[in-house]
Image (cartoon, rainbow, N blue to C red):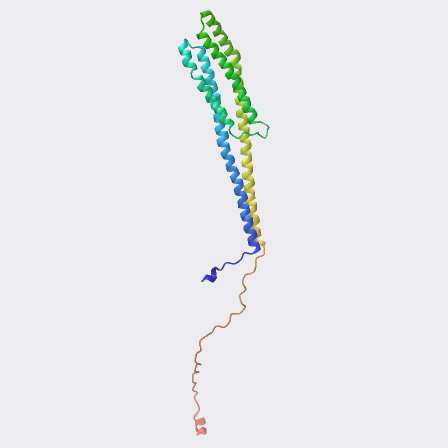
Length: 261
């Protein structure tokens, strides 16, 4: 029974086909693993990153609106209530920028650079926050001014500064964020194209390799199997007694019988 399942050493053609199948599977696995990693990067660093940048733009607009509300505050108490949220809003914006900067920043094929555009956003934000802080400082001096004339002069300076200085810097922040979002989209497009190209190459390699291995399996010479004897040896039978031939009685004529007598 065990002889039927006897393991024999594979031939050279079998070893070659097995090695080709294993190599093709390993290369395909590596390519698909790279595509999977790129998809994860696209989601975690670019899809979520673009959402964070959109939130930064909204937070900057909220910060700007808080400054405008502080300009319109009717009394000192209301002014302090409005401006007490400014440090929190600024810290939230800076945290979002730092979190995006911690990702792997890249350069697109068209030459758009995430590190350069992100630095432009940082610089424009620093300039805007500096201008906004000066506006808040002038308003704080206004509410603490000893005379109404001095308070009116400080308010006028604060309004002019908010319109002529903080306003253009706010526009620069918006433009820098728009450029960064466009760069993010461009880099994500490059990664998508690269993943699509990898999938197509891997698919073509799998199809071509499968056909090649099938042809090898058909045309490679195979080692001859065990040869069966041309004639089977006679089977051994048990000794039997010789068979007794039946007696045949022939009818003889009466004349022959009388001659014998």
